[in-house]
Length: 159
Image (cartoon, rainbow, N blue to C red; front, side, top):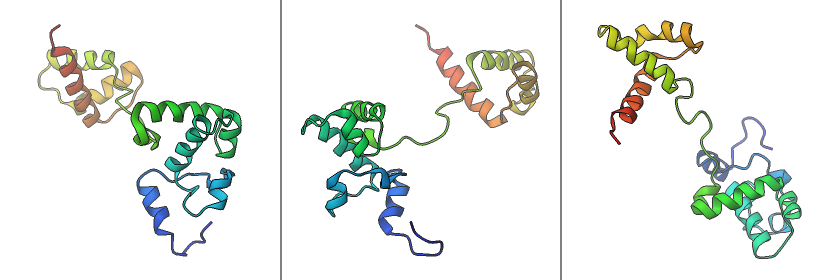
């Protein structure tokens, strides 16, 4: 592990920026990663690919391969499915955080739309308190605007 102030390996920075830095490279005990310069346990895509390859090509048992690559059996199955569905891109960890407006459900958006229809002078910022009082969720006005745009797009299409 690098000391504070010490220069970071440029490859570590590249892997981190690409979201491919393995948070536990020391858990990788497979001989190709410990004995060959080409293989880098810090590269999560390379580690997961080699784990799946080891099972499918070399016929290593899943539990054994997963353990030697620092993963669980469940992680093996997830990596194999991601590789099958999306190729190498599927092995890149997803961006962290919520994927959508999880607080602003259709019910909340319908409530907001009804309020706006009843009083066209209202703005998104005027809906923050009523939404919080009615649904117990605290949201930013811009999030309300974006959610309403998505809601309107989804409800304006006729079947």
